[in-house]
Image (cartoon, rainbow over the protein chains, first blue to last red):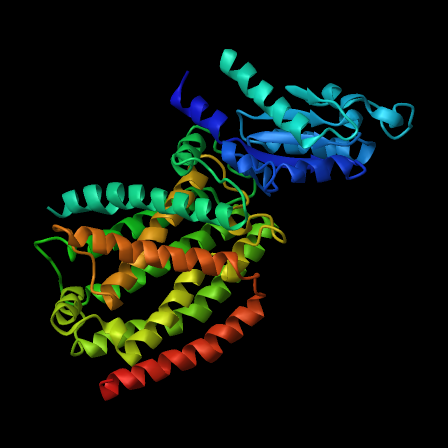
Length: 140
Length: 306
């Protein structure tokens, strides 16, 4: 494994995007930064700019307005970059599956590397998902 | 000889100490917030990771300046720290006016961040760069007044070497009234120069994404981060030379020099963790009002010999 990939897995910076979620998943994502869970132990930081990010966390049901923005943001992210879908809405649109405003699920718009189900997922589940994704990239 | 100093001390030693300092800063911040904090090699890993990432140049930016700005900032910090290191070794080499050169070189990192922000063409980066400019204008005056105090006390000498020699004969300047006032001013200005919390107005993460660095990715961002980590060593180093008698690299005095640096780093981190961010107008009023007042009083005391 190359040095830069090893460094990447040990300091993944996270950009957090809500595509029309109810904010419940977003609160759980922010919980990961609190003293109880503290993901800075693993070198993860929440960044404000997509240009600094290595991980794109997506919550919410990808409605018509935000899908375009999501695509632009994914194109702007410097590669290598992974995408994690958090919560039932971004996995399968959840209760909005028959809505006129949510035409396709997230993984039809951009490639998704890890799915974390739950409504909302617990912070433990989010950290476990991140660990599984890191192991998957290491295994390649 | 100068090249050896530049590469060994100016770049490698300063970068290593700066990365360790950055880890200490992050770890202390985490402990103050009852968190565990990052592992020891985390700042180095961040830099290595960013060097391996894709570098994106935004459309509509001025490309040359966008790529060149991080290099200007990095180079100026490296040269400034080289000048400071050259006065701390056993064979001190100093020239007339090197203190003025250091003052200028320490202003260039802010200017390079401004250049990068304006060149990237991002509206958020422009707001950040304009705030950085206002902040630079507000803290340069008290900074230069604070640096005047050691110059006056060492008999109007513009040589770093002369300042160190005066302090080794008469005790450090921080023990006198004017010295301690100037030291307080210097610590406040240092906080603004490092863009740490009460004065991190230019990079306010919660309002303007990451300020001037918003559009930087990959190598440019790595250079800017490394520059900031090096500045976290270079500015306290300048303070120690001006007010606390400099670093000594021989025998048991290494430990004492180390303690001086750690104490200053501790002060910076504690100020950073116990203060809310100011608005740009509040910061300007603060620097042009009370801080400049204290600095002028310190200069007057220094002229009177106190």
